[in-house]
Image (cartoon, rainbow, N blue to C red):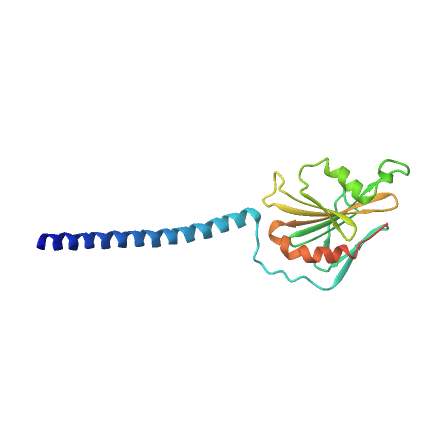
Length: 195
C-alpha cells in the first residue's frame, strides 16, 4: 500500500511538473504570438505606408483652373506642373491632375458618353479594379506601385465629357493617406466645372 501511495505521489509530481511546463510553454507561445502579430502588422503597414499621422486639412478654398476646367481644393495644395495635365495640384500624401483627352467632331469618341469612354479605356489596362458611378460620373478605382516607387498609390479617377474632350480627373493618394482624403475627394469632385 505504501508503494502505491509513493507512485501516486510521484505521478502527481510528474503531472504537476508537466502541467507547469505546458502552461509556461503556452504563456511563452502567447507572448511570442503577440509579438509576432505586432511585428507582422508593422511590416504590413510599412508595405502599404500606412500612416497614423493626423493631418489637419484646411477649410480655406483654393481654386485651380484653366479656361475650360476648374476645381476647388484647399490652401494645403500647391500648383504642380505636369506636361500631360491641364491642371495639377499636390499636398501631403495626395496629387490631383485633370487631363484633357481631346476628340474631333464626328469621331468615334465624340459619340461616346463618359461611361462608354471610361469602359473603352479600362480595356487598355489591367490595373483597374472597379468602375463605379458617383452622382452620374463614372469613377475608376485602382491601386498601383510603379517600379521605382516605394509605396502603393490609390487612384480614384472621375470622367467628365466636355465640349471637345473627356476630362479625366485623377486623385492619387499614397496608401497611408487614402482614408484621410477619401471623404474630401468626394467634396472636391462636387466643385468641378468642366467644359
